[in-house]
Length: 282
Image (cartoon, rainbow, N blue to C red; front, side, top):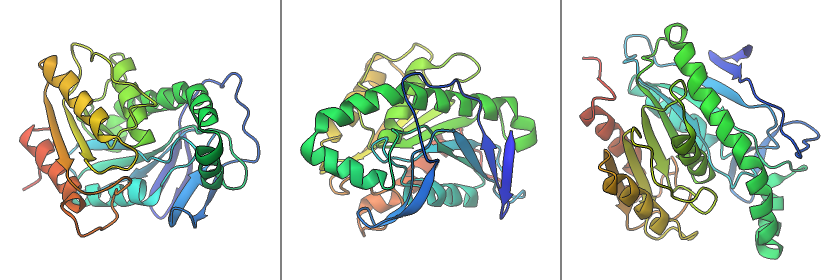
């Protein structure tokens, strides 16, 4: 499974079924997107996990799989991936950043997404619709991998969370609606989830606890979908929390905006402790 190790970060290649009717060419790309002013990964055709381990004296056995956002055309790999992982490590949580399969793109997937959103939004929906079942499958494989390898990873097989941002939030909810016993997440953290790409459904009866995070002023209009997600869990008498910030916009992730939304990850951590999903080391 392990294909490379750099600076104590292991990259784990996940098993996957070959996608029908989707062709990737030219390999995965990683670059600084001027448009989004952050490092991105595009054209992902082989799903991987990058492992971030906490210091052993802090390790509390909880793990979180992180699915960055980017419209399924890119992954905002720093502020919605690696930086989240490092923050969680400081709290003793093992983090695994998931690169799930994306819409095939050329040299700049972000530019392609921007151009289509102005000139041909229907094509985005069509392409996303084709690839998202594979992205969700990658998410389910990630949970299964962590559960099967819990001992080697030094994590509790019953404390595996799944956190996703925007398009990664759509993957999170796809995981929530499609798990079986071996790949069931133990808690869910959809952050400004893209509910157009994964519409809200009736949750399963044994759905895990969930904390929903979003901002009312999200320019993509994602606040109502997050409220709907909360309500779907609440009506089913499932364990659920909602943090809806008045300001924060879209894509705040770990970017500092000097707003209350900056501390969302601290609120997540407090929730995980209150729910006994995380037991801090004394």
